[in-house]
Amino acid sequence: MLFSYAVRAVYVESCSMFVRGGVYRAVKQSLGGTLAKFSVSALMFDYILTGPISGVSAGQYLGGLLSELLPYAKLTSAPLSQGAINLIAICFAVIVTVYFWWENTRASRNPAKKRCTS
Image (cartoon, rainbow, N blue to C red; front, side, top):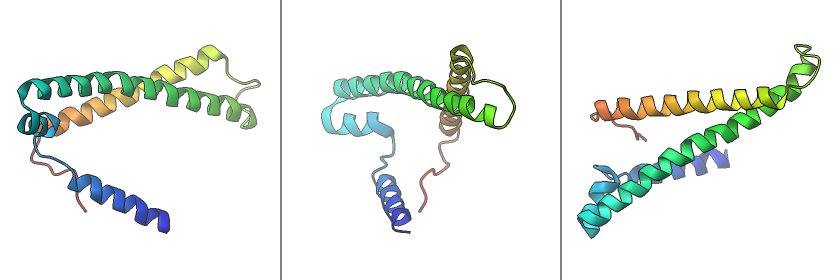
């Protein structure tokens, strides 16, 4: 119960820190256009690298879990090969990346939708 209160407090705090117009508008008002473009470029670079790398890492864990559990369920006689685990990781990363891309582009097509509600 205490953990749920902590999660809610963090969620409410993050919603209150949301700035309309995003990072570009906030930095442009504070520090000017050049630094705003630089900060948005750094943020895009971070999104492009961090998302797929995290997806592949999570896919590796998922593949390893399946490799250990499938023999117990009598679906395979031996653990999965490293190639199969890598294929699971790639597929998982692609699915997760496409899902979040789709959600982000859907939100930009319909900006009137309020994402953070308490």
